[in-house]
Amino acid sequence: MSLSTSLTAALSGLQATQTSLSVVAGNVANANTPGYVRQQAILVSTGSGSAGSRVQVTGVDRQLDRYIQSQLWTETAGGAYADQVSNILGQLQSVYGTPGGAGTLETALSNFTSALQGLSSSAGSAGAQTAAVDAAQSLALQLNATTRGIQSLRTGLEQDLSSSVQQANQDLAQIAKLNGQLEGLSPTDPAALTLMDQRDGAISDLAKLMNIRVTTGGNNQALVYTTTGVQLAGLTAVQLSFNGQGNLDATDQWSSDPTKSGVGTIRAVYGNGSTVDLVANKAFTSGQIGADLTLRDQALVQAQAQVDQLAATLASAASDQTTAGTAVTAGTQKGFDLDLTNVLAGNTVNLTYTDTATNTQHQVTIVRVDDPAALPLPASPANPNNPVIGVNFTGGMASIISQLNSALGGSLQFSTTGGQTLRVLNNTVAAVAVNAASVTATTTSLTSGNPQLPLFTDGPRLYTGQIFASGSQMTGFAGRITVNAGVVSDPTRMSVYSTSPLTNAGDTTRPDFLYDQLTAGIFSYAPQTGVGSAASPFSSTITSYLQQVLGMQGNAATAATQLQQGQAVLVNTLQHKFNTTAGVNMDNEMGNLISLQNAYGANARVLSVVQSMMTTLLQILP
Image 1 (cartoon, helix red, strand yellow):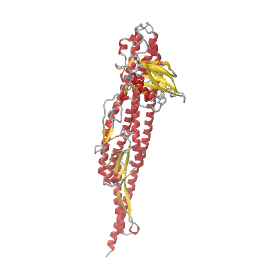
Image 2: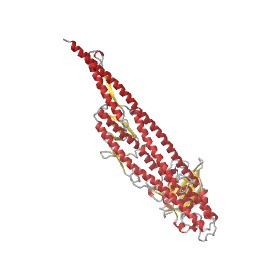
Image 3: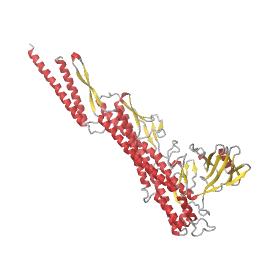
Image 4: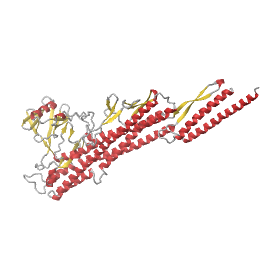
């Protein structure tokens, strides 16, 4: 190797070492900078053979594991989701209160049951009557308060969604801006590295809000998509819009039809004016936004349905009277006559018949639905043998019969004997036996002569469970339930069920009935509550149902906490793995610094020796 070649090699070594020292200095200086990724100079050997070798710095690279980074973004979204769900379900537990404690549904129901038991022991006691009314009011007020608590949580989530969408827009705009600045730069250009760190920081922040997929495009671009394939950012960013609805109540629920939706939805708005409903697109299944939507539209809606069902069952247990049909025979046909006089919207006709050819039993529920826009009622595929059929009664008996024959004429035959009497018989063509028929109607009077009474009402209206195109009367009923104003003004109605003749003092018929309904009555509960299913509805006492609800919510809160803890461990583990490569380790940097110092000294020594040899040669030459 010639002296000139040695000089060139040493000079290149000094230059490479100097650049590497600058990179190490930058790593040390940014050791505590959030989002900073450790950098390393890219060294390439050039030249070979007799000409010798030199080193060249071709750029600077970021040291990170991109697969771990991608996994970290995914699990960051999962961690944010788990954190929010655990937080809100924990707050929901506070709404329900400590089991057995004061100011809880459990205690209010127990107090009402005890008051009715006391009234049964002394039905003529004015004090016992007043105590029973007070306990009923306390139960209604507790249901009202529980509804306010649930809807307050939903309103908070609506507001949180608005804030999260604003933050997501800032992150997407930042990603697009940095993509623009990085366009045309080499990924090893030192000027690009800080921009990449900033872009990754914006992506990490976005990952806390929503689940995303990130790919690298041409010109060093980071392309951000939802996991359903909707592009959110490249050189430009979409604008997310959220039409928040302010304070929510139980009837405010999400619908893909914007004319029916009572809550805000998130849309991606593109530069050409086109939009994509990302909620309808199911783009948010993780991240804080995903958690907010799941809680607002599912978990808390179900929680509201549970307390609404409790309120509805309390009202119906006190007011509904079921009257069995009268068995009749018409030639070879057999069936029942039913009096529809007292059937109100929401009340039901209940039929049981058997297909004798297959020995299959069918239970049919006919609901009076006077809103034509609500018909037909949606079918329940889980219960093909137990259909619920809506019938509009406003057109009179002829219309009722026509609708029923159209819906069930293949098995049953409907007619009338006059007035409000509905006759149901087995169809002569089909092998069918009508086993039972009854009418369940809401008692409207406090003194009907029967123990039933409309004790709990929907504000000033009767509660009948009627169905509208906009939904069921049961939706949000727990927030509106109140004690009948007539009972509040005259507590004797807790005992007196007839005025002609006047109920005897000390008659315990009504309080006994109410107590039995609350403690021993068996009721079926809607599958929307999550207790039971459409195929196998939960049937039990009111107390048992409430215990099921509280147990379910307690288990959900516990499971959410466990998931949050597990997800936190996973995120921390991935973060540690990522930092192992991408983070600045001061011990390693100091080791690199010593190595570079030695290399610098060695190259400097070569230069010194070459210089000395050249000086000597020059002195020898004539």
